[in-house]
Image (cartoon, rainbow, N blue to C red):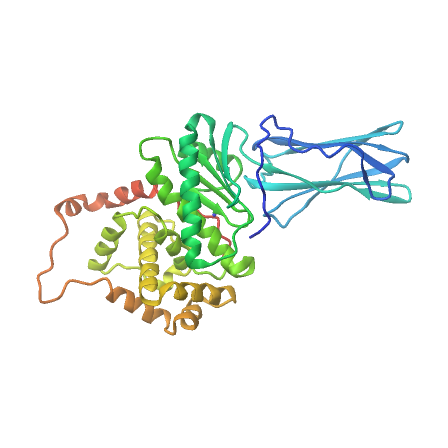
Length: 415
């Protein structure tokens, strides 16, 4: 979601759970040949520490050794003056980075390199990188090379049928959603499926992130969801996976620079409308809000949704309904025109005017009219008895439903 800049892709090829992530090739000479790398490694414990190590041969006395590293989704590069040892012609240096004090983005790509200074010059090693995954668990994987999709699930979570189901849904969703959006496809899509919400929450908390039951990291082509391998896992996959894939494709449609202009109602509305198994409760929530005259103005849905569970649930329901209306009235071209307008930096209101030829208020009026209110000549049917009895508990009911959707808490850039 919620909930959460790219095309810097990361093919997460074999997860080296032994923690030895990247070894530079032996005899990898750098710069003018004064330094020759023997080993260049980065070993980590998720959310605990990373140990960067360098061993090289050199024909000249070394004066300084610097380590540089950065996460793909982070503009900041760490630069550190690292203690080193030089004995005869062998140089060794190591640095222990404490992830508890300075977390790195989980499931991101970490790139690192060294600069070695000596009298009269310096050499810089080639850049190396590793995938910073949650190594507390053993992950199984299944991939689709043609579509560049890889699904990872916790080994104890389920048999290959579980992974194959996720992969099939991801592949079909990618094809169906992009038939409308016509976006450039990500270089790769990695989907990590946790077995419980608690394990996903713990991973995000350890890494200093606040994600919910689902999250798309569009700049990296990464999706993280929580789906237990119970009797209902297929239905959850049919909701969560298409929802998050939509965010990736919206990002691809508008480019990194344009993504910040896409209004929340369109981004989340498309994701909600593209769920392969619709949430039936949405219609009930919209109808109740209409009768109570509590529908959220579309202008208020241009920005990230309220953290209040009831309001957020209604916001997702409305956004999906508005997108469905636009599809019916203006077709797939209308959706593409909207994304094109926002890709060019249009505001929430001007984008609608440019793409659909109407203002945002008129769009909202037309959408509300399409909700088919009960004619005034007919007595209004009261809400079902169970809804009336729910009364003050409706908030708790909605909150329970909210835990089952991959939306809240998306780490979105914004305003």
